[in-house]
Amino acid sequence: MQNLIDGFVAIRDFLELGGNVLFAIMIVTFVMWALILERFMYLRTGYRSAVNQVLEEWRGRTDHTSWYAQQIRRELVSRMAMALDRGIPLIKTLVALCPLLGLLGTVTGMIEVFQVMSVSGSGNPRAMASGVSKATIPTMAGMVAAISGLIFSVQLERRAKSEAEWVADELRPED
Image 1 (cartoon, rainbow, N blue to C red):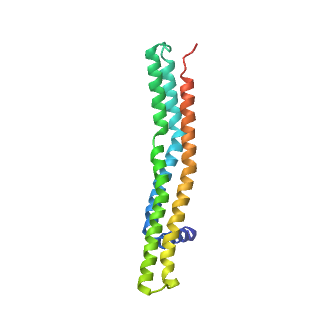
Image 2 (cartoon, rainbow, N blue to C red):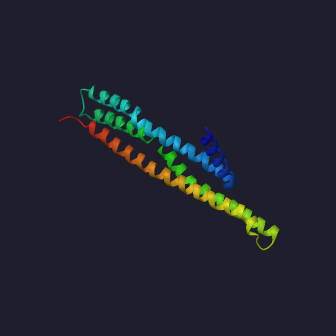
Image 3 (cartoon, rainbow, N blue to C red):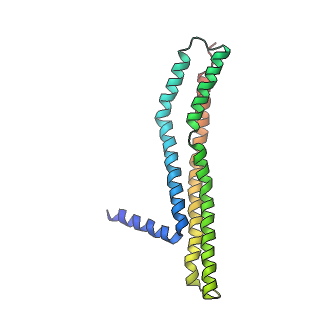
């Protein structure tokens, strides 16, 4: 229990050291990872039942070669591709937002450094240390969050594309 409390204290201290922008980066990162985990869970569980429904619907048809059948096939493939891609654009947007928030933290931290320099004169290193940490920590946090999200969003995108292609191949008309 003490380890858990120590962990929360360390996170609180880190967030205070990085400034207010770090809270925004933390929230964006949590939302991004919730969406990433939801997509992986969908691919692991809900996707299979959706594919089975689509395959049953297609195999239940007697006509697979007419123009109307091809339009139905196209709609089924499109429906599966949309279900697979759901949430991925938002994940990619959040990945792109993380470094921008880190840059915002850099700017606000540097403003704090310049304010300290204008008040104290030439430059007191101790007084500027708080602003420098508020300038560098959000940048690092934004980049780490973006890199981790980028790796998994690319995996999700590739998996969604390959699964949609697999469904399209499965719905080919039998010769």
